[in-house]
Structure formats: structure tokens, C-alpha cells
Length: 190
Ligand code: PNS
Image 1 (spheres, rainbow, N blue to C red):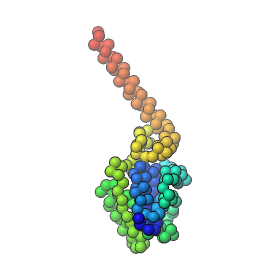
Image 2 (cartoon, rainbow, N blue to C red):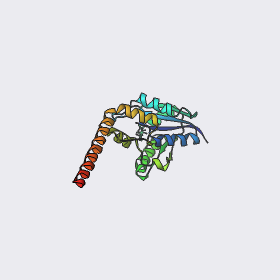
Image 3 (cartoon, helix red, strand yellow):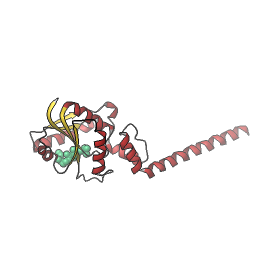
Image 4 (cartoon, rainbow, N blue to C red):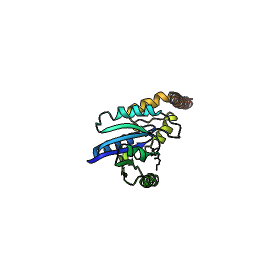
């Protein structure tokens, strides 16, 4: 186990099973892991920072060496304020690498004593991202297995009209199929 504090920074909007997988892996390696939610994100978020904080706290309650916090401004400054020695980031596929490499090198330039450590989440989550989860959920699609249950529930509450619209569309399709099937039967009899 690596002595000292590591930071796992991100937007976590929302937390996916891939994030959780990485947190669990990180918690086995680092003495203390601080999951840090960026507060001043320019994107318009799906969940408020307070909601993301609460969900992450609930999801990591069993991991005694994991703490959830928020930060503003430069991540390396925040890391220094905690006397952290490592930044943890996940790499799912080669497509993540270029952005992550740039960020790691910029962070190293800003603070050479901080080391970025990359870990891979389980391959079953290699295609899961917060952005795609938001996109699927916003269209009323199923996100079961991609996000923890508490997040799935929150998405359903937040996007209730989208889920209802999708259900209505699905029922319409099924009704049309049923009518067509009955119509075909009648034709065969005639
Ligand atoms: O989950 P994300 O959105 O990929 O996380 C990106 C994050 C929050 C880690 C990154 O944008 C960040 O550290 N922002 C804080 C501002 C900062 O330090 N920028 C310089 C990074 S090279």
C-alpha cells in the first residue's frame, strides 16, 4: 500500500460504475483516497455539486480510507493543500490517453512533485462514461448496470418525463405490431 494521500479528481456527473470500480481499486493501493468533485465546472451539470457529493458519500460509505470532497480552481493547488502525493485517473481505452497524457504533463509542469497514476477500470465498463449515461438517460433509455442503483434512481426522478415519453413510444410500437398481427390473421382467414 502506498503511504500518503491520493486524489481522484473529476466531474462525476453522474458517478458511473466505472468511477466506483476505480475508487475501489484506488482504495486498495493508497493509504487515503480523496475523491474530489470539481466545483466550478463550466458545463451545465445534470446534478448539483451537493447532490453529487451526497451520492458519492453514500456509495463509498463502506470504504474507510475514502473521503469525498469538492474543489475549485487548479487541481494541483488543491492537492498541495491536502499534502497529497498522487493524482489518480482512469484510462478506459486508447482514446482517453491523449487527453489524460496532456493533463498529466500539464499538472507535472505546474507541480513536479505530484505524480499522476493511471488505473484501468474493469473491461466491462470500458465504454461507460458520464456523458453517454446522461445522453441515454435524457432520451429515457435504460442505464441499469452502467451506474449504481442510487444514481439510476436519481436519474429516473430527474428525467421522469423522458422515461414516460419513451414508455409511451414503446407502447405505441407494440400496439401497432399487435394490430398488424391481427390484420394478417384476418387476411389469412378470408
Ligand atoms: O471527470 P473529468 O471531467 O474528466 O475531470 C476533469 C478534471 C476535473 C480532473 C480537470 O478538468 C481538472 O483538474 N480541472 C481543474 C482545473 C485544473 O487544474 N486544470 C488544469 C488541468 S491540466
